[in-house]
Image (tube, rainbow, N blue to C red; front, side, top):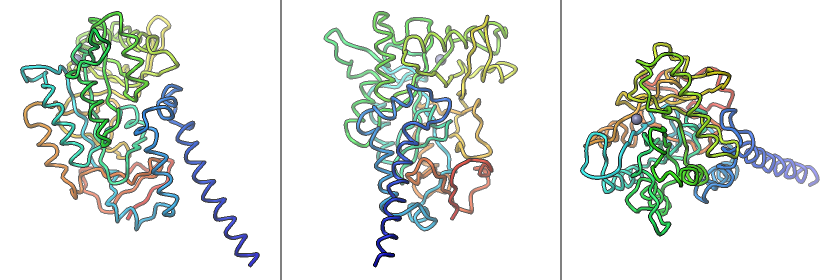
Length: 361
Ligand SMILES: [Zn+2]
């Protein structure tokens, strides 16, 4: 009797300890790159965003730890491809760099319908793929900070046809989260409406979206001098961070024209006249889905993106249909990596030193 009570006590203590350890790990132990503002985002985002990891942790705990059997049953494959979509202007008519509001709405509905769930670039590169079990991650990126991505009307409400309003509309369905990465440059004030730049950037971050850099002047870094490149990388990062405040770290960079400098390492870190900068991720184009952040083929500074024009989205979704061994499927636990033993060779190999639990089945 006594013994069974002791066993029960130990079991409860173990389960509760694991649960609170996981929650506090999620809230406070984030990856180095994320900085304090990211912690704020995780703990204080909208209810959809904030509740997802905790709910998953609770599910995992109440059903026992994630096992090979459970990972297999949910078809978890965290070595699969992740599409990173590229948008520019939102308006009419539809064109190479313009998506109509109606098509953006349809894209989001289609993605939700097909079991995708959004993720910010900063979380992808940190391996923090915190999406519900069984869902597949997709990253939405918006370049050039054009006014039609985020416009506030005279009465203070959001223009219902701007990108942010359309994303928020999808969040209200309960099937989507407020996540997307906005890459800003300063050719004109980000998103226009110069007196509202700070408000918009802060809102994006507070709501759960990511703000990234697109250099100061939309610089062609393939042609620019090393000094000019370093200046723009450093100053764009600093200006965005100063505007957002609260210790927010800008960690992602969309490379204008996908024109890379001769030496990529200048993107990762450097300094200009004593002003230091660093980026964890750089995004290119390329037209293919990205490798998993747990794959040997994942390249932080060359993340490929798919331009969403015409039927590009339908084509990538056809390649990543439910049941495809190429599709990333979450196990619901952002701290554990689950994947089948037999993987298509094109996905690469699982990185050897992930520093987190791995389940192969
Ligand atoms: Zn651009």
